[in-house]
Image 1 (cartoon, rainbow, N blue to C red):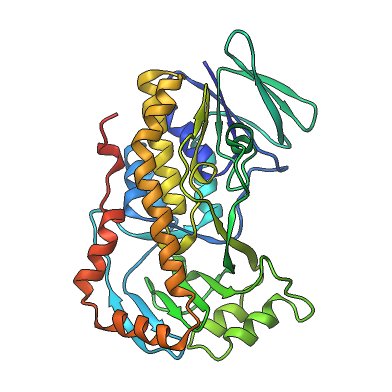
Image 2 (image 1 turned 180 degrees about the vertical axis):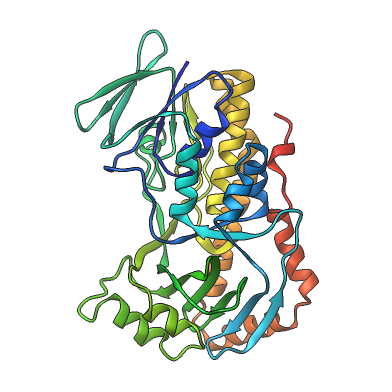
Length: 375
C-alpha cells in the first residue's frame, strides 16, 4: 500500500516513522527545495515525548534538548509573579526545531521528494488517488495525508473553508547563546507585549516576542532588531541581550482556525496544523501534531488505509485538539491585554494563585498519555 504525505515537517515525518512496521510505503512530498526547519525553538512536552519513547527516539531527542528547571512569570521590570518547577514522569523540554527535524529525518524510511508543491488530486475509478504537482510530476497513491501546515492545500481541497483567523498580534522568534543558568524558562508580560525564554541545549536559549499590531506589519524602515530593541530594550535582563545577540530572527503572524470537524474525505485526511492549527500560547502545537501522528498511525495499522481509519482517528483526537486551540486562544487574549486595569487584575491573580493550582491547570496537557488510548 502506498501512502502519500504532503508536507515534510514534524507531523509528516513522525507519521512515517510511526508506520515503519505497518507494511505501508510512505512517500513524503515537500514543496520547498530541501527538508528543513526554521531557526526557532519548539516545546516537546511529556505528552509528546511518550510517543517518541514508544518508537525508540526518546534518548536521542533528550540528548539534543534542554530541560525546564524553574519557570518564572514576570512583569516587564522583572517582578516575579509566579515560579514553578514542572515535574512529570518525563521531562518538559525545548529544542531547536531543526535538531528535532534532523533526528526524525535520520529515522524515517519513507521516500522523500523535494520541489513537489501539490496542485490538485483526483480519486480514480479504482479508488486510488492521483496527485498532480506544480513541477508537472504525477503520483498515484492509495491514500493521502495533508500534513502541510496552517495554509494547507489539501485542507482547501477537501474542506473549502475560509482563511486562517489572524488574532491581532505577531511573533518574532530567535535562538542564541547565553550565560543564563541551565533550565531557565520564563514568560514576561507587558502592555500588549510578551516575551518568552526557553532552554534549548549547550548554553543556547530560544526566545519569542509578541506585539499587538497589524497582520505581519512591516518592520522597516528601522529594521527588525532595532524595532524590537525599541519595544523591549528597557525590559528586564536577559531580554535585551538575547534580542541583541540573535543573528537570525523569524517573524510570523499569530493565526489559527476555529475547531472544525470533517478532517477526512474518502481516503484523504488532515494531520497537525492542517487539521487543528493553534496559537502557541500553550506550547502544544507541535505536541498535538505528534499525538495526532501517533493516533493516525495506530488507526491505519488496525483498519488499513480506509475511511474507517481516518474517521476513527478524528473521533479520538478532535476533542483534545479543540480544547488546546480554544484554551490557547484564551491564554493569548489574557497575555496581550492593553487595558491597565485588566493588566493589574491579571498580574495580581497570577501572583496570588498557589503554585499547586497553576500546575494542575497544565496537568491535563502534560500528563496525558496518547499511547494508552484504545484504538
